[in-house]
Image 1 (tube, helix red, strand yellow):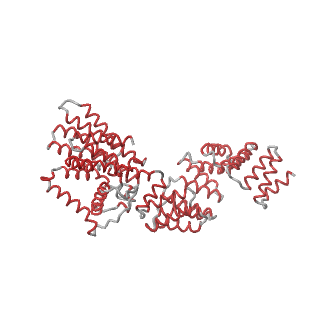
Image 2 (cartoon, one colour):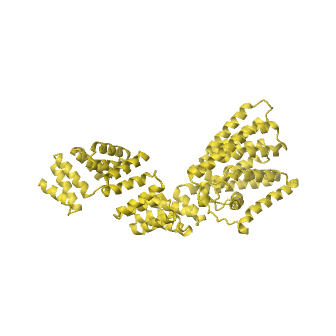
Image 3 (cartoon, helix red, strand yellow):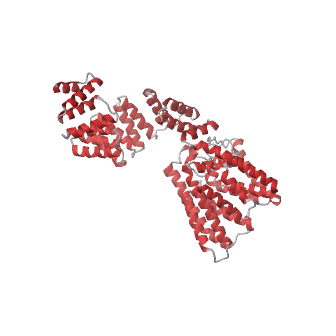
Length: 561
């Protein structure tokens, strides 16, 4: 909120320095416009308001330097450069600021001085230098590559045209705003696809032809709007294109250009226009307040998105994940099925639906869904891993092993798959192979408590009790509320001839919800060896209550009578 408020004040100061009429109104509209709620209320877009405030500060300082006599105000230029660097480091879409400033300066004075061009050159160089870094990061680290991003120039041009009009329409009439908008199909072979870029070109041509009557202000506002939106118009691959081509936060800075035009038109309209504008600001304030309620929590946000755009598969998947995490598995499954109806064969939706089905005890159905997911997306490591888990749960250890190995071929550095493969190998009697997989999982993720537990069990099975004890003690520190780790620690302590400590570890495992005959039998043995015969008999008796056919517990109980 503070950063956005600062950005609004800086926008007013920049427009005043450019001598744009109605600067106060443009800044007020910017401050309260509902399209900016996403940038302010969504914590992931703090970079948006931060970069916006820094970019506007850079613009104001550069204009102060440009208006000062030559040889003076050098500190303003240095501060402008520093703020611009900060803006780029916060969000590189601000690389367009130098071009926008030069255009605005040319509009203001009808010319650009050599000093201004020289003073802007370092900012231009920085912007041009950092933009490719973001393109590379999006592609190689974030994952903006593949079939969904393999778009022709014709497709990208059609996307850009429609995105421009969508953003302008959201600004002019901020209704049905959404966190995620549907990703529309792009077919350059249809006239409809070309209607949007064609309309943009015709509008720009009309503004040029009417410049004698309207002045260059409207054309400049349109140009700055398009330039500032440029990085998000689809010509450069960014990961959100996986789901949508537009977003409200894309036009955080770009919106200033059309809002400045509105402010200037209202200023020329006199008192009646100013009263109308004041009413508009108040109305926008109320709409923005209502829009902010959508960001109360994640479930509210996804339900709000679906209320206005029920065909957004991403919203259904994310809502389903929230419901699944809250234990509402049937509701979650319905959302995943709805997502699959919108995007048949989507591997993420198939993977998530399978998880919800397993939670309902429908393992066979889940396995079928995971098989479908890996068939349509052989590179989906999570689906391979989850399929392995389901097969292991069904006792199909050999089949599970094949799936874990498939996950690791796709992603060798996948700690979960390594640890799960270790579990299957351990259950299959391959202690050495299991130990190697657990050790690699721990190397990949040193704070992976379950892998350290598995490593401890494998080391104990190899007779390396001191190392096993060390691994399990680290696991306890990492996950003190994990009863399975306490149970494994009890086994190793018992094998290390430390019955009292073993009994304490077993008792903690019981308190943490791990209740099974084998654990109770181990507890009884430890208690008996520690001289606590009465407590040992109670432990053996409880084990027999859970499993009357437990021969070990029956034999141990008889030995104490």
